Amino acid sequence: MSKFVKDHAGTLQLIFVVAVVGSALLLSLSLRPDSPSRAPAAGSAALAVSIVDPIAAPFRPSVRLNGVVQARTVTSLIPQVSGRVVEVSADFRPGASVTKGGTLFVIDPSDYELAVEGTLAEIGIALSDLTRLEAEAAAEREIWRGQFPDRPIPDLIARVPQIAAVNARLHSAEAARRAAELALSRTRVRAPFDARILETSLDVGQVVGTSTAVGRMFSIDSLEVAVSVSAAERRLIGPVSGQSVTIIAPAASEDPIDGQLVRAAADLDDSTRLGTLYVSTDSNELLTVGEFVTVEVDGVNAPDAYRIPAAALTSRDRVWVVEGDRLAARTVEVVGREEDMAVVEVFDTANGVVSVPPANVREGMLAVARGPGELASPDSRSD
Image (cartoon, rainbow, N blue to C red; front, side, top):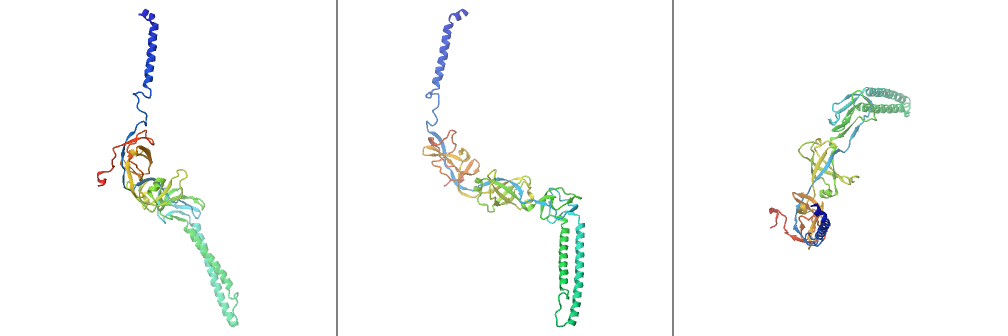
C-alpha cells in the first residue's frame, strides 16, 4: 500500500487541488445576485400590507400624574422674649399635631411680671400728681376770681402746663404698662394655627433668646400637592380652572382622596423643563409632607378622535398609511389608550392605516393593501 501511494503521489495531489478549486467555484456561483437560492432585493416588488379604517368617536382622556406633598410655607418658631424655659408641652415634639391657640412652651414670666408692677406704680404716681395739681388749680382759680374778678387767670397759676406734663407722663406709663403686659403674654408661646411640628430641640431649663429658632412647624391647611406635567399632558388637561382630581396616597389610606387643581406655576423647572400644577384638598390630615402620590385628572373632551391598533405605532407618535400605491409615514398625537387600541387625534389616513407595519418599512415603498376593514365593536358600528 505504501508503495502504491509513493508511486501515485503526484496524481493524488492533483485530484485534491481540482476538488478544492471546484468546490470554491460552486460556492461562488451560489452567492451571485441572480442565483435562484437568494431572495429578491428589498423593494424590487410591492409589499403586501393589511390596512384598517380608524373609528372616529368622542374621547375624554384621563391623565395620570405623579406629585409630591408639600407645605406652602414652613414657619420657624423664634421667641419674642428671652428667658429660661419652665414648661414644654408634650405636643411640642416632632410629628405631633397642635391646635390653634394651644400652648407650646412657657418662658419664666417673673421678670415680666415685675415689669408690669413697675408700670402700675408709675401710673399710680402720675395719677396722684394729677389729682394734686387739679386740686391746686381749683383753689388758685377761686382765689383769683375773688381778687381779680374781671381778669382771666393765667395758665401758669391755673397749673395748666403742670397738668399737661402729668397727663403726658400718665399716657407714657399706660403705654409702658401695655408693653410690659404684652411681653408678659409672650412668655407663653402658643400655636398660631392648626399645625404639625417638623422639628424642635427645646426642653425645660433651656435659655432662649429672641434671635434663635427653637423649632419648625407648618400649617395643616397649607398642604398641597405639586404635580410635574409635560407640555403634551398640559394640552390634554386644558386650562386650570378648578378641575376635580383624585389623589392616591398609598401611605395614607387605600381610599382615594378628592381634590382640585387650583393653579399652575408661572415657569418651568430649570432641570427637567416640566411645568408644575398645584392640587388642594379638604383632607389634608391624610397627607404627609414629602410623600409621593398619584394624581388622576380628566382632560379636555375630544369630540372626534381616532382609535387605531396599538401595533400600528412604530414609535411613540408614528404610523404608516397607504397613499395610492405607496407607503407614507404620519406623525400623530396620542391622547390615550383603550385596551389594545391607541387613541390619537384626527389625521389624514389616505387609503387606510397599516395595522402591523413590517420591520423594513420605509417612506415611498410600493405597497398592495390587503383586507381593508372597519375597527369597531358590534354596538359601535354604524347602521
